[in-house]
Image (tube, rainbow, N blue to C red):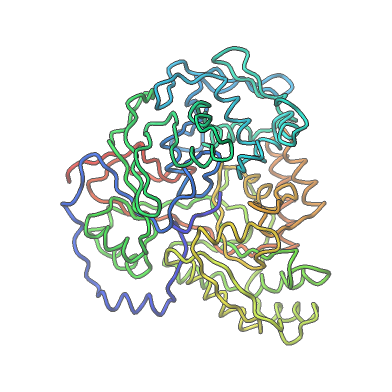
Length: 551
């Protein structure tokens, strides 16, 4: 899923960050011991959430909150192993490897008190692929479930591969065997939604927008209030059916907070968690022994990279590949790692090295400005690019701009001028995912599930291209890479499957539609009164497991 700017973008140059360190001095105040609110988790954000509709929410800040409202069939244990959630057990699989059968728990309820049935899943999954919903997740279903694409295209009245033999049994038949489908079934966008809550709005054109602002789900929390751009409040669901109800009574999120304000509020005890720690504060607090026990870190399966739109100048046409390769050689990733103070690992490929069972063949593009200039000359630009590149990035947080300025300086050294265009994430994400809109951008992708297909298929398959809400932001299309990824999708031997994906990544790396920069080390700070905070390898943060206790 796309990384929302609340987790990792950067807005101050290194010089400014170092100056800030000097201004604040080497001393920090001790962690606060007062200010906590009983059983209420208080969070801060830059941009408001896009939606509370599970079919729509798709970034790394939005999804953890949506998970509190909606729960799908499966979940993960403390690692990357799937466990049943609203299903009684893990699904059974037919001999041909194509039909999964889920037996549903009979005690699951929506927050309106009504019990959840298999028909609710049928309705919800059809809704995800209905073009009127405009779900960015639709292809996860249409590319897998038999008859889903025909239904989405209006060529079939129902989805052939979805059946409910009885009120608590769901059968899903796939187009072909797919080892990733159980992971997809654990994603919040496939959680059930109640038909009556959506269709209570008579105007069909307004139904989805209304539901996004007034969600009714089956999770441990219920929607209470949302003042757009200001604050959101969720409260514990009295109808929650789960074996372990949350110890929290409420979750509150404040929006419109810049990184410095977030930091100051956290240090004063007005917020309970902080994940986008400004560079100056990070260095200061990390060195303070009083704050060190409150840090949590995890090398997460994600990657930050530069997108180069293969349909736009100067990255398209017969010489576009050489330009893209030149940009790849021109960026010094080790410098980014050094300036990150332990928050990054240098990237060679798009698939993170910690992906379970995966071994990349990609050697990457070492820092080589001489080779970059040679490639630009071969592409017809002996004096560098004649026009500046505009690099789009989100303007929140304090890491994205620092990385962008390193890129700007490195490309200037090979006679490629770069103008930085930092914008609000709510503007940034629709722009970069719209065809013929943005040629050059800084982006981050975090796993939806722990498998290389979630990086390669989603980001580089021709099937991931659309005119708007495109997951393939480079609009890169390769018959060779597509074929290898399609073979991998259908392969049931786990090792052969991983080998095919490794070959596909090698092809993609040679074509260079992106410049993989760094893999993130996720670093969070929590107050001493927050208990149970442990970063998760898939969800990163699971708010339902937290509690508030006096220090």
